[in-house]
Amino acid sequence: MEDASSGGVLAGLIGIIELGGPVVALLVFLSVIGLAVIFAKMWQFARVGGRNRRRVERAVYAWDEGRFTEAARALRTVNGPLANVVSTAMDGVLERHDPALVREQVEQAALNELASLRSFLRILEAIAQAAPLLGLLGTVLGMIEAFQTLESAGAQVDPSALAGGIWVALLTTAVGLSVAIPAALSLYWFDGSIEREKRLMESLSSQVMTAAGSRPQVPGRQGQEATPARAASFAHAR
View 1: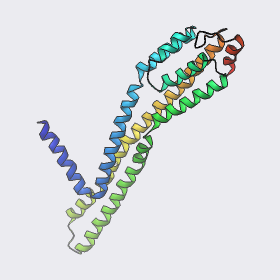
View 2 (view 1 turned 60 degrees about the horizontal axis):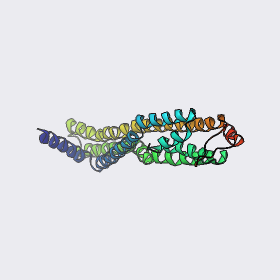
View 3 (view 1 turned 180 degrees about the horizontal axis):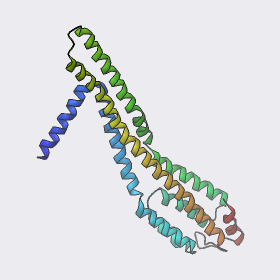
View 4 (view 1 turned 180 degrees about the vertical axis):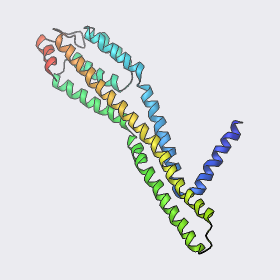
């Protein structure tokens, strides 16, 4: 039963391509690329989703309580953009770097992680913008062909033939919109998720810096303690 259903879908797709011509074939190709990008990005975002985010927040909570080394060690077991950025902030504080340098390192880490999250989204954007235009182009070409057929028929015009030519021409617009709408909606969702991740990076890394500045002493990498002046400077780093 499943084989018959799959065969019917494939036959229907081939029929649409044959009716719509090269424009529909190109749109189908773009839809395959778009779906591949959407599924790949969904898998990427699922890996950095809620569970890892909660683990990062727990590590920052431990950091706020003064358990600096424990928090940094726990964060190194978490994968994902948010964890990497916050870990950069914690490592910079524990290594007693200059606050301005720590802030610069955090910003660079955030830029790198956000660039990874945004990878391939330009492809979705291009598909969302180009697919309707390609569909419209196919419709215009189809209408031209339909009216050329009408002209060659002379006085013996078959209305059904004309109607058939018009609906085939409109088919490319429908296919173009069918390709563009999922790409556009997915793009909006991915952009929103990236913006939320960016805000969390800013909030949690700032929280790490502020917590370090509010403590009189922050342990170093080898158990040394930062001087009160050095620790306090983190509070005014931003």
